[in-house]
Image 1: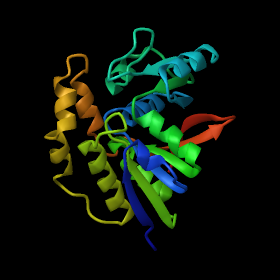
Image 2: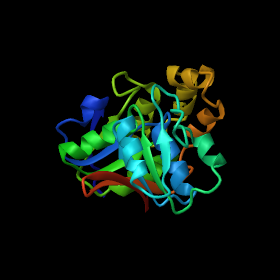
Image 3: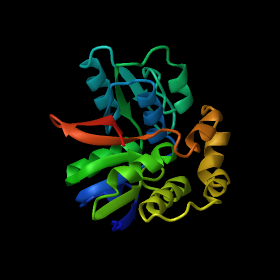
Length: 230
């Protein structure tokens, strides 16, 4: 079976002027948090670019959950921060709609959709294998490591991109990849930032924890992320 041609890009600008299948990566922590929410039975996740857009969208969506961050912190009026551990503590997210805004991941996905990419997948380590399986039959796949706030290279996103690329090329996983991430600057940031639960790091590093991909499509002009079993 032929393997796809792979183009690697980085940062928010990497989602500009793209077409065809694209995987947007935000490992610490947006698309790990999203995967944990879907695993708990959330119906769909609406992805937006700004905090005020998130608030407006949540107000117009009955019984929705407002999730996200600004500079890594949960705004006081949000129900959840950008944290997989927080999702585990939420009393009952099943069958509800989550409205999510983050500094990098959600903005990058919306940008990719606006550029005309299709299909668009949101990814992190916890769904790496399933994401690769979802696009394996494509002839060309673009992988974008969204980075810190979309403007600074993040080692964890670059490493996740490398892992997914290896899966697409049917190469063996690098046995030292997770060790490199755990000793990197992103992991240090998660571990030492006072308002971030240190357990988030362990959740984010669970490769292939979930067997579904996360596809994002425009529905009436809105970016909607859903679980896609593969």
